[in-house]
Image (cartoon, rainbow, N blue to C red; front, side, top):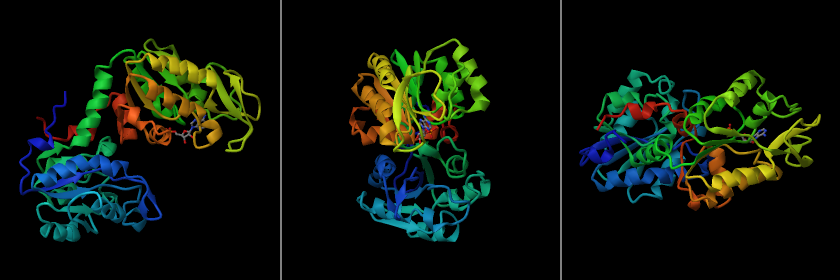
Length: 391
Ligand code: AMP
């Protein structure tokens, strides 16, 4: 089902290979805060090094406004990578132009060069052909391994693929296969768990999953909008009034069974130390807001998850940043980990929850891409994948 050229199909010996990686990692005090995404890129980097290629890595980091901004430099990531690969890792202060070209000129086979943040140029996000050509000029071959950015049509993710032989890296392939198979040929029952703040971000996902999943379990802030659509008074809860009608229409659509929380944890303030209590789903008292799913819901969701063949989870069940309101998210994390189902977790917060609970080893696949995995769940084609050469 994966019909794109792989890096293993390329003749990369002695070649300069430009690899788009997803090094968009959190930085803390100028150092790498979490190295999951760097580790995830290692199979591709090591394969190319062992195969006698010179490896040029490019990525974005954070959201600089199209200009060079030291706070978003990839230099700390290059330094960190130096301790992870058995090869010299160099750094170029720009990803295109003279500095990049000079650095590439002296780059040898078996060496790695990390280019500075692609988003230091506003042309990156515009998928400007000039920038794509300038990137292509640096290498003989292009490999995209940045699943986390594959839903973006940018110069370094799609544009450059027009000017070089272009193949997929191991991470991109792995992510697409896990998610693609889960959606196309799920072992049933296929259970989707959706949470997070907003339903507006996930309308397309719910629409698509209604036709594919057997159960869709809804938690998090997004459940509030569904409650409102059922006519409940939600008081100070986060509700998106502009999509209440859409939520209502989704509930009336035929397809997989939409399950809402049967009980919720409410708080008298949006605060870690707020007073908390649980109540059956219904009218929320004045001055209170829903911040988590309740224990009965965790139990109900867990019993569905227990019998699942495939589980896909995106988005926390509550404001899990506040320990008092993290029980729903951690309860669901445990249920997913305990289930024998093929389990796939995507989205920064759900991945953080699973990591915090130390259960990640029990998950079939923890995705490195939140937005990209959501777009796959929505049934959309990823531009970063489409741009690559067919097999
Ligand atoms: P998202 O970025 O859409 O995945 O949403 C993640 C955020 O949703 C987290 O920061 C949670 O704190 C927040 N969240 C989850 N449940 C609720 C809720 N009931 N009310 C407000 N925010 C929530």
